[in-house]
Each structure stands twice: as C-alpha cells, then as structure tokens.
Length: 96
Image (cartoon, rainbow, N blue to C red; front, side, top):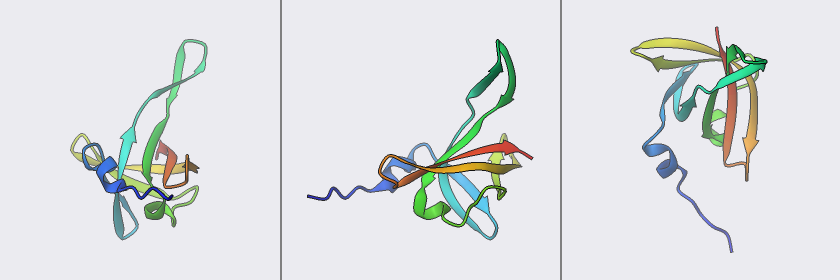
C-alpha cells in the first residue's frame, strides 16, 4: 500500500522563500558550523531542504537568493542530493 504524504505540511512552519531565476520555492534553511581543521571553524556549511520537484532545474553552480536578516543574499550551489525516498533534496551552498 502506497503512503501519500502532503509535503507542504512539512514545510509550512519552517520554510522560507528561495528565489531561482524567475521562480521561487519554499525550503528549510540551515546554517550549521563545519569544523574543518581541529577546533577552528573555517567555513559555514549552508544547506536547504526542499521538495525535489521544486529544485529539478537547479544544478551545481546555480545561484539561489534568500532573504537573510532583511536583505537578499546570494548562495552558490555546491551539491544537490536526494534524501530518503527522493521526495526531498538537500542542497549544500556557499555564499557568493
């Protein structure tokens, strides 16, 4: 038996608008620290969790825009991978 889920409910409370080219979609934005050398934080690993169907046209090198602290910030896509059953994808980004 197939389980039909409403993915919009998952994004409803935590997602924000993300702009790509002439379109927008909703995704959960995360900014965990990434420790690359001992106790020194060398970079911040920005990630988005979004519905795979919404990010099909996004590739490595694409530029996404998000509102961060009241202003638009550009992020370059470093990696895009589907998670779990493929309904959602995680996008790794860096600030441009």
